Length: 194
Image 1 (cartoon, helix red, strand yellow):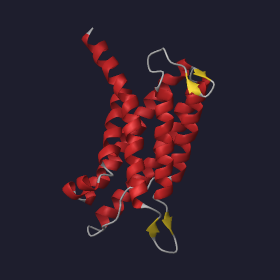
Image 2 (cartoon, helix red, strand yellow):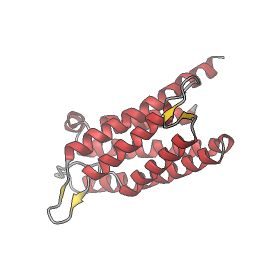
Image 3 (cartoon, helix red, strand yellow):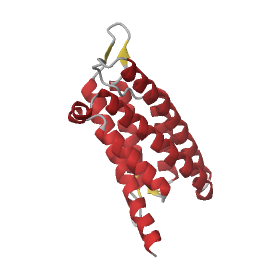
Image 4 (spheres, one colour):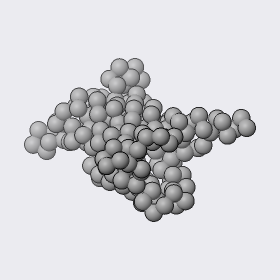
């Protein structure tokens, strides 16, 4: 139950954080805090998932452990961004710069989880509840990886490769992660009501 809530709320933070209208509305400090809070929620969800994954088999445990490592990298990155914004209130650049190490961990984790899921060749095997989740999760991991490439700061110019690519792909990745978390929320509501 708590794992689904942590992933859902963390996803919402990463869903609204890269939207320029949100940053304009709340300011860069609150926008940076949104990403940092989202990263902490992902870490809490990842820790709960790692704890529970041992019962699902070795591959799922490794996927959860590697994903949790990725969330820790994102904690460091988002905390650094928050420090920069709070230290310089005139800072007017995109706050979120996805960490390459965190994105790599997410990709590895997504591939492991997808390979461990029931499939027909490369395609997910339909029929059971949540059959689509490993594929959508992997897609979210790919979007976060593309976001990290777009957010890379070129040392010679000091500017990002493509801010729009970073924003859009962060949003798309968060949407995928939210889609995977929402079914867990309905399961947790059903468990509470029974």
